[in-house]
Image (cartoon, rainbow, N blue to C red; front, side, top):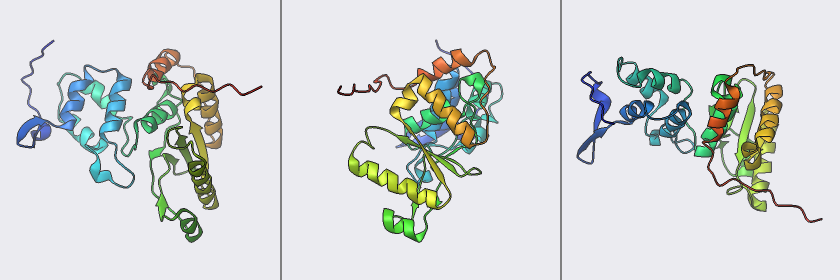
Length: 243
């Protein structure tokens, strides 16, 4: 369906790329607001604001740019939904799985998440001299970090953390952070995909954050299902142990 709109747009709505005039990332986000579900729109925002560790200049856009743009598009189709979605967007995700873990753990109950907000993506933690010697680096970037509580949540995918070498590095890294007063909690792929295991993880994390998960919102179950529909369809399978 084609829609025609005669309302003015901010000057930044159209940008030049390789000599062609195209929609800006901020306009793209607004345009998709009327086409995507609220969960997919939040995920789009997270990915538009994503970048590699320590390289924010590589992000396509930022939460602040999205907010500023949307504030000047009153009356445009999808604006209210876009403003709602961008409330839950944060800068700095380094992967789509980090974004999905963040959504499951931090979105409010009404959107199917566990409401453990306050986490930031890939916060730069400066390492002390001993940790630098062990890890051969000056800093590290936990996937999700609760600054006030000094708790880091790491996503352990089987793709990048399956070898003994990588697992050893992860353990050293966790010990190095623990020595600096930062508690590391790991969520693996099975825990994210398995609804019961994920719920248990969320409750354990909540206890360490001195929070309680008390879901009374009637829409939680339905919205949680929609949220889980965003997970890639190639679900991990646990191999049966030899008897």
